[in-house]
Every structure is written in structure tokens, then in C-alpha cells.
Image (cartoon, rainbow, N blue to C red; front, side):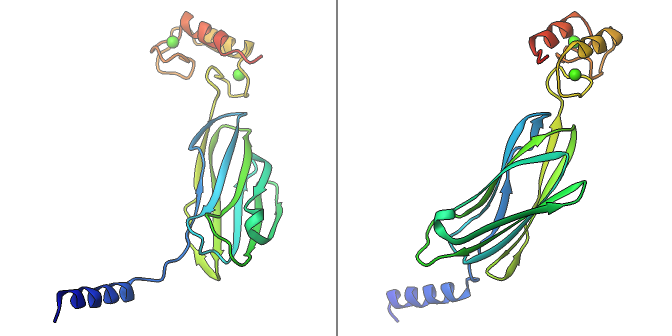
Length: 197
Ligand SMILES: [Ca+2]
Ligand SMILES: [Ca+2]
């Protein structure tokens, strides 16, 4: 048998053994943000194989959802989102149906959040693409205090100066805002330099 024929047969067998390529959904964004800051989370699929999708996003309401940009409006005949939820958890449903001849890399949505409270929060996404459930890892966001905000109220001001004064000379505490090892004069300067009022 000729070498070329063997290679051709090998290729056919290889292609036949490959699993059907399926689209996968991912959620991305920052892993750490400062309190009171705005950040963007992106939910997207990795291929142009998406014909129809239902994406459900849930988020803790300690993250305020400010804006939703469902995309690509141009590449889908139908784009619709609906928001709901209870006191602690919000959700957003986004459905897509693709029109003929669409190409590209679908971004399902960009979500703008504002962090309102220190802590660890998870944004979960469940996705059904072309009728098949897709397993999606959630995004965990750690909301940290602003640099210099020792009492965690989202502002750097007089109260944080008081915190440093009250814990003068301590080591290994949150009042050591400049990370020098001890609480002292340089921490007062640090707070003044990061003053938000
Ligand atoms: Ca503060
Ligand atoms: Ca210090």
C-alpha cells in the first residue's frame, strides 16, 4: 500500500474519532477589586458554534449590578434579557438565537458591577447551548478595602486616622496600612496620601 494512502486512511480514522466540537461558556473578570469600585464581568462562548443559548447569571446583591450590555446584537436575531431575584441574590437571564450566516466569537454579555461591601463573592453562570447544558466555573471576586480604609466604610478619611492613632505601635494589624510592620507616623502619611474625604 502506498504511503500516501496509508496517511489518508489514518487521517480519516483520526477525524472520525474526534468528539463533536461543542461551544463552552466562560465567565471572566477581576479576582480582586477595591470596595466602592466599578468592575466589568464578561460572559462569553469560545466558538461560533452557538445557535441558541440560554445563559443564567446569579450574583450576590452586595455587588450592585449597574449595567448589562448583551452582545452581539448584530449577530443574533434575538437578544433578550430579564432581571429578577430576591433581597440577597439577583439573577439575569439572557437568551440568544443566532441568525443565518453569523460568524465570530459571541460575547453573551458584559456586566458592570459596583462593589459595596468587603468580602468574597461568587458570580455563577449556568448555560445551555444548542440544547445541551454546559458546565461553567463561577467567578469569585474578593472585595478589599480601599488602601488606607482601615474601618472598611469605603472612604479614606478622618476616621481612618483615628484608627491608626488608637492602635499606635501595634504590629501585624490592619492599621499598618503602609505595610512597614508597625503602626506609626508613616501610616498617617499614607492615609493622607490616599484621602478620599
Ligand atoms: Ca474609612
Ligand atoms: Ca506602618
